[in-house]
Image (tube, rainbow, N blue to C red; front, side, top):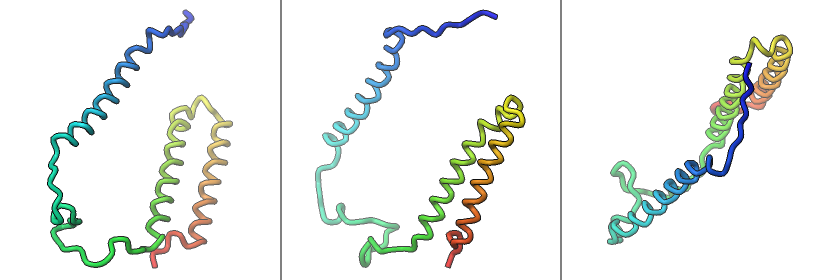
Length: 126
């Protein structure tokens, strides 16, 4: 089996720096360009809020239930945990029984957290 060496020189990073420079230049030029060629007329009608063609009545910053945030946060947490399971599933055979035990511990902590959330009523829609 031949050995592979990964030596890098500063010249190897030039394409990355060029791509970074193009990305930054595009962002800056887009912002400046829209400011220069965009509409300048500011009327009350244009500055007003528009939502489905219906006139706005009342304050737009009304409080609403924290249950929406709880459901979103729980979705993100469990979605991230599933993402952590993907590398384990890909390397399942190489990890053997040790990997199985570690994933079992991880999943038991996840299930324990889910049981805690259910008992606290975070998933109840009142």
